[in-house]
Length: 66
Image 1 (spheres, rainbow, N blue to C red):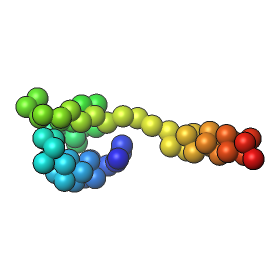
Image 2 (cartoon, helix red, strand yellow):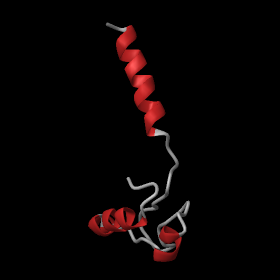
Image 3 (cartoon, rainbow, N blue to C red):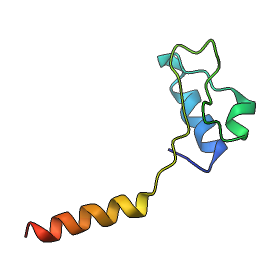
């Protein structure tokens, strides 16, 4: 969530604080790749994705099965 949006990642991290997520503000601003603190019980990462490509692949697969 929020590959290119530090504010969204910070919000998601804050909402997941109950899970042990602690976001490092500097790492988050620089797009990581790891954006969680060393003391975080859960690691958080910025993972590059090509959503349009994934949607296209699923569309082609669906069209071929129908």
